[in-house]
Length: 99
Image (tube, rainbow, N blue to C red):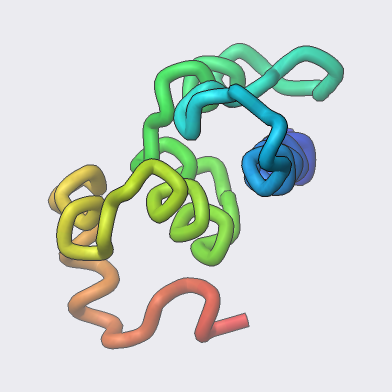
C-alpha cells in the first residue's frame, strides 16, 4: 500500500476548494478515480485525521484539510489519538521535520 493515492486525493480536494464556483463541502472528499484501498477510502469518507496520519498523509496536507474545515491547531489536535499526541510531544519534532 502506498500513501500516494490518498495524499493525491487530499491535495486535489484542497485545490478544488480554491475554486470559487465549487459548491463542495470542505469535508466531502472525492474518492472516485483514485486507487484507494478500503482503509484509505474509509478515512477519506469519514475525514478521519488520525487515520490520515497513520496512513502516512503528509502533515502539511492534514493541516490544510483541517484548516479548510475551519479547525485551528488546538481544535484538531484532539482528533488525533492519545498515543499519536504523546509520540509527537516526546520526540519534540513532528514527522515532517525528520525527513
